[in-house]
Amino acid sequence: MKKILLFVIVTLLCLSCRQQKIIKVAHRGASGYLPEHTLEAVALAHSWDIDYIEPDLVMTKDDQLIVMHDPHLDTTTNVKDLFPNRARADGRFYAVDFSLDEIKKLSVHERVNLETGEAVFPGRFPHGRSHFEVPSFIEYIELVQGLNKSTGKKIGIIPEIKAPEFHESEGKDIVSKTLFVLKSYGYEENGQAIIQCFEPNTLKMIKNKTNIPLLQLIAVNEWKESSADYDKMLTDDGLKEIATYAKYIGPYLPQLYDIKNDRAFKNDVMKLAHKYDLKVAPYTIRDDAIFKPFENKKEMMSFVLGELEVDGLFSDFADKL
Ligand code: CA
Image (cartoon, rainbow, N blue to C red; front, side, top):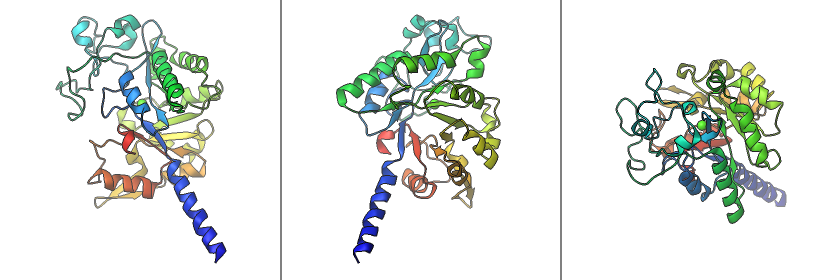
């Protein structure tokens, strides 16, 4: 009887450990509530019970790292109003064409659809209210580390090196700069960072230069995120190869299940990833954009946590994970 009781207690403890171990990532900071990647969104996210805050990194004309999702400045700032003549032939405004001083003059707003000018997520922070700056990566790190000290928390960062192929074609070494900044701020030793990227060749190259664990992001081929073949990455051989350089994968959540008759069925990706000891942290949980075929967030989360049993999650509303 005692043995059975002990077994039940240990099992329950293990189950609760399993739940606690899910890595919670504040995707682009507290981006469900404040304009993405602003210091204000970092401060709010830091107040939550989470593990990592996510900065996306792009480079400026004067080789500084800024925290921004796109290589373009026009979907989240007022660059068109302040510098109307600085677009390239494709009509876009590129961060690599602006100095950090110039970028600091911009005001960040909620992401807009460039064709319609409308907010991508209409229920989020209103336009034209408050002033938000584009942070440099250094300012961002200093805020996170400062808050870690003053609160006693140990919240990490999970920087994503954006578009290394594009940066390289512009003569920008975004990889070396990122590694240099991370090393300067102690991330080689403190265990509080993970580096993510969509480009496998970049991660393979980084692997030999840092102790910081790596996360291979997996896109959908149609998005043309990079020259990599992401369908191949999701196969047994593809995941086996990823495990030679990365510790985590970050797939698009719908890549982990098939839909039949409006119901979701777990596919083999989770099982194959775990076979090679890869932890799986899909993106992106959004309370205001529920994935098909789920009717609501509760249904989606019960599938994601109960059936997929993911190891981590990226969410715009990480306070509600
Ligand atoms: Ca990202």
